[in-house]
Image (tube, rainbow, N blue to C red; front, top):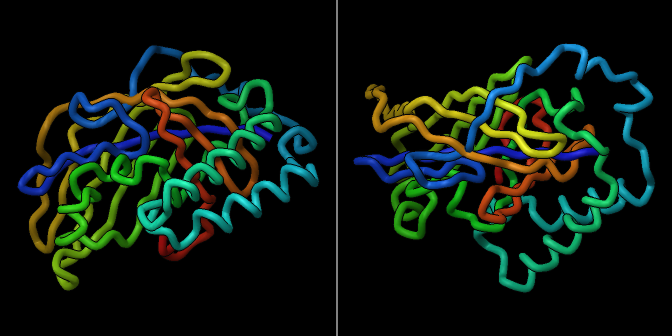
Amino acid sequence: MAACSLTLSSSLPQPKPSFFGSKPSHLSLHSTSFALKSQCFRVSSSSVSISSRPADDLVASLLSKVIKTDGGVSLTTKQHQEVAQVANELNKYCVDEPVKCPLIFGDWDVVYCSNPTSPGGGYRSALGRLFFKTKDMVQAVEAPDSVRNKVSFSVFGFLEGEVSLKGKLKVLDHQWIQVIFQPPELRVGAMDFQYGGESEVKLQITYIDEKIRLGKGSRGSLFVFRRRHGGSTNV
């Protein structure tokens, strides 16, 4: 068992999206240098195969609480607390050095954030949701150190668009990572342009397995990522 996390930020006439657990400097994620050595990821199949009954039950419980909640937007305060309690239990099953676990790589749907406007920033605010209907919030982590966050949306229900960030991952210690993002790219219909400046985010990996990844942003926001197996997922 193990865990991870990450984030974004931007805007349409420039609403700034703080993508997936960030610190609003432009977008989000902190940085330090650390070369992700390939040997760190040569983990035996026995150490990667996470099969603890209690953990499996907790994962199923957590997903049942966050799926189809619009990334946590529709949950009450009490329901957010219930999600946090299950996540805290799962933290006990986290491997010692989750940043070295090869399960971190892959495509992930961002299915929950305790601060629902954090993934996507202004696009996900109460005002932004009146104009932008979120379709997908996805994070791709590729070896050795590439991160890409993307929020897909429709404007007024008919004009397709997306905002994305490309970043470089750096390891701080056995649980914490930083990502430095390039300026965000915005596409709406036929328009495609880049705006703003670089951003950074610092995140703690608190649990990871074959199905989910949990992370905490530097400001304490909890993120739940579900491994993506193709196709679009309604968050």
